[in-house]
Image (tube, rainbow, N blue to C red; front, side, top):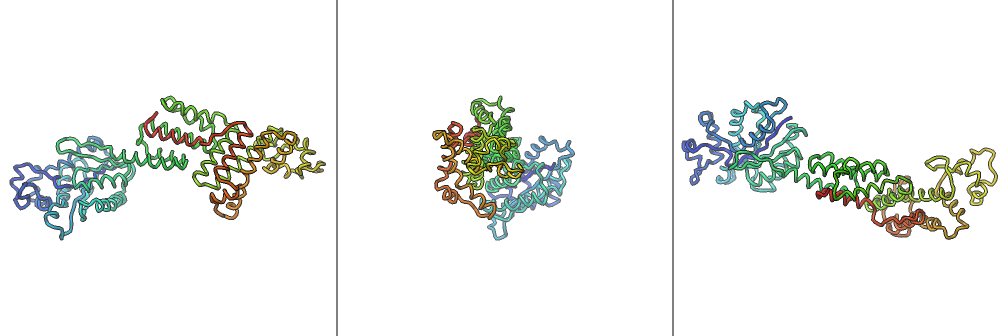
Length: 495
């Protein structure tokens, strides 16, 4: 693993003790304050004969504190697997820049610091070629310019030096201009992600401090991205996002959120058994959310087709909300077919297999006379029973005819209401063929025009049909809204 320290170099990053400072030429010091002028002082101190005499009296208060912090974290002297890299960003404005600005550029300081750091820290396995000086020729006091500079330089460094996800990148934001530090922090956290760790050094404190700002930035970004995914009911993508960015949330928060997303993902796929088990490992950690979690578990405790048909109404609502009209039509088809099948079962119809693809042969023969009246079977059995296998294939049209005929003597039966509502639900379903066979796009307007009513009215007919079949009222608000609210409450810190 490589340890990286990215440091902006400021005008106060090089110090000498007062006695040594007094021996330096006045030409490299500010006339009023006596402070070193960075460009001039850096060039002077880098001269071999000067550097050899003064190197023991030079200190780098900002970067040394950062290096002490890194050493305490990684024990570089004792760790053969860690290697330290340092990048020093020094300003070097063009020659036409007025002298009162250009003389305070820090490029000379950066080169001086590179030389000093190597001599001082080579015993810490610091290799000179791993101390890089990056020149900044633009105005370091312009936020936009600094954003462009780091947006160009940091990805280049990451690519050329092969900074990988296992590396740790420290951003020293104590030196340089406020604009440089702001953009090193902002762009650094963007480029290096959660592996970026900003360090702040205070002049009056001996120890560098790690800031939490990058984690906060990424946590806020995670929350925003999750909100978008939740609005799209993209639970699998939301789960992967949380799993790929661990440690941004509190441990209990991450566990409970992932459980909720796994629940929602399984429920959307109608895997109700897996959904029911999703909260098992985290349930005991809930407090004020316990009743909400319990209700969601209760929703999927029954895995019958009746419950899955109710879920299909919810999934049709989601498809409408997200503009997924092919999926909307598929949900209408499955709902209509499922309701007709369960009504037929209640009226005594049997099938040849659990998937209800064909009417059971003995039932078909027993009711041949009634089926022949509605044109589904021959009055006389054929010589070869297999010759009418195709007639025993189940479809919505046959089911509707059978249910209607079986209920002729029961004009007030609620199934007749259900049949009427399902006729409305069925109207736009043929649009699916247009897309599947002709690649013709489907719009909301197409669906409404085919149904002769709004999408909300189609959904209302689904709920009406369900109530007529099962004597259960399906709420207007689908359950996935409650799931999303639970996710939001978890992100807000409620447990």
